[in-house]
Every structure is written in C-alpha cells, then in structure tokens.
View 1 (cartoon, protein in one colour):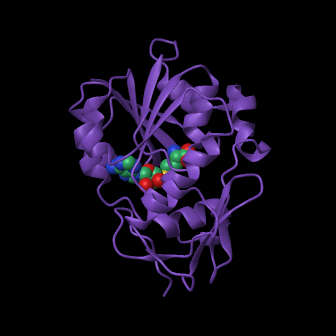
View 2 (cartoon, rainbow, N blue to C red):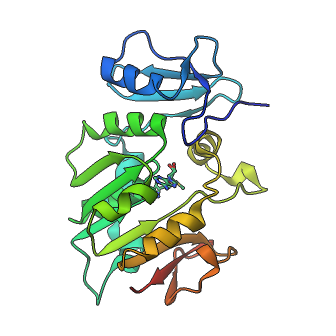
Length: 241
Ligand SMILES: C[S@@+](CC[C@H](N)C(=O)[O-])C[C@H]1O[C@@H](n2cnc3c(N)ncnc32)[C@H](O)[C@@H]1O
C-alpha cells in the first residue's frame, strides 16, 4: 500500500528539500510530518520549481508554467470547449472562480483569454507547488489556499467553475502520468456534491466538468450541457442561477 497524502492535511509524511523557502517549510510542517524516509519526496529545482516524486511508483509532478506542456492550451484557444462553456450570451465573463484548481491548467487557459480568475485550492502541498510556479509567470490569477466550501461566499464572479477529481478509471494506463500522481496525491473529492450545493447557493452561473458517463453532481440535472471534447469523454454541465 502506498501512502496517500490526505487532502485535508491528516497526519502523513513527506521528505522536504534541505534548502527551501522558510515560509513554505513552515506552512507544510503544519500539515505533514517531515521525514527523510517518506515515500513522497519534494525537491526544489534549479529552475526554482518544486518537483514531487512518489518513490515507489516513480511518478512525479513538476508544475512549471513556462513549459510548452502548460502553455499549449493558451496558444490554441479555438479548440477550448471550456471557453465555450463559460461564455454568457456569446461573451467571455470578466471573472471566474475556479473552486477546484488542481494543477491550474484550466485557470491558466481562462486567464490567458483575459479573464480574471480567482482560484481556491485546499491541498496544502499542491498549493505550495503551484504558488511557486505562479511566481515565474504573469497571470491574472489570484490564488488562495483553503476549502472553497468555506471561502466561496467571500468572492464575487460571473461564473463558478468546478472540476472535482473523477473516480479513478479502470484503464489506468490510459490516464496521463500527471493525472495519475494527482489522483494519488489528492485522492477522490468525496465531498464534491457538498461543494456543488454551496456553489449553487451563491446565485451565480455554475459550470461543472464531468466524465460523460457520470451522473450530474448532486444528482441535479443541469440547465444544459455541452460536450467537452470530440471523443465525448467529458462534458460541461451548466446551471443558471
Ligand atoms: C481534478 S483536479 C482539477 C484540475 C484542474 N481543473 C486543472 O485544470 O488542473 C481537482 C482539484 O480540486 C481540488 N479541490 C477539490 N475540492 C475542493 C474544495 N472544496 N476546495 C478547494 N479545492 C478543492 C483538489 O484538491 C484538486 O486539486
């Protein structure tokens, strides 16, 4: 059994780099036990980017938003079904709250189109890694740590966007490596229905990304849906206030 870091910061172990910003070390040690023998190793690269490796699987996560892997979606916006899904009367919104930002790919794409993005991430380790990656790029993203269930009411936007973690797929070989480690790191977002309920209470248009076979969040049928990609593997459920 591999250890999984709990999304809400339960007791778990992590090996931290010898040299790292004191504020990050201090922040992480509130959530994790620092242990050189841990299966999870965090490093800080020469490029000033955090790299997390799970030793047993050799899976790693290295969010560097300067790399083409992350810039790709910003360069080809015409192919972006999420842009279509967030449009209100054919126009892009000015502000979107991303209440499940993850590795921030969707947020970066939206911000790349001039949308102000407020992103709220609750996973402490992911938060620290992404925050560092953000220091190397110019974006319109305000990035916060916390549970969106508690913080949503503090912000205003035209759209709230939810993309909770899908249940792990059986054909795991088909899941990209980055997604595999994200799954192992974050686990399942079992409270996604509750987040959905709270998001609905904000009286804001809601856009939810779902696997095409999955029921709508909260079992509540959306106002309408749009297909998220040509293969039809995912869809966006849109709820009007
Ligand atoms: C599937 S990932 C999102 C991927 C993201 N759309 C992207 O483009 O990278 C889901 C993320 O939402 C976060 N999350 C889930 N529920 C949350 C909540 N209530 N508050 C804040 N973050 C949450 C998880 O920790 C995880 O990082």
